[in-house]
Length: 104
Image 1 (cartoon, rainbow, N blue to C red):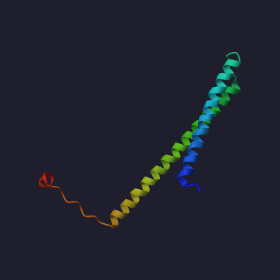
Image 2: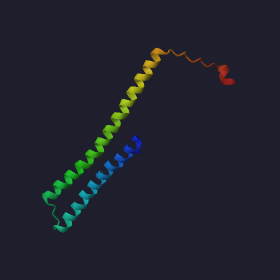
Image 3: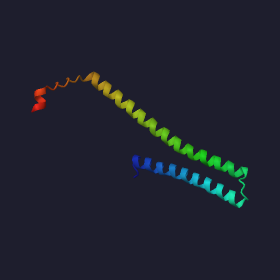
Image 4: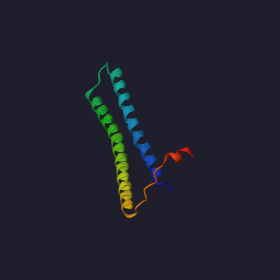
């Protein structure tokens, strides 16, 4: 059985693997078109390069956005829970340290 954490790792590697593959394919096709086409890159190749780079950037950007959204949501939930606990369970203030305590 695959755990939720392992699924996150798998999707991470798939997203960044596809992004890396798209970037490498765009660069490779650009060089191949440039050198095999008498130093000219056709418009179709430029379109593919642009689409590959935008798609790869989209994969990376979406992953970062989702990860940050979960982190922010988790922090808000923790703050809300801590606030509610502090309202319902009053804590005693810690005793102040004196110079005598530091000397011991």
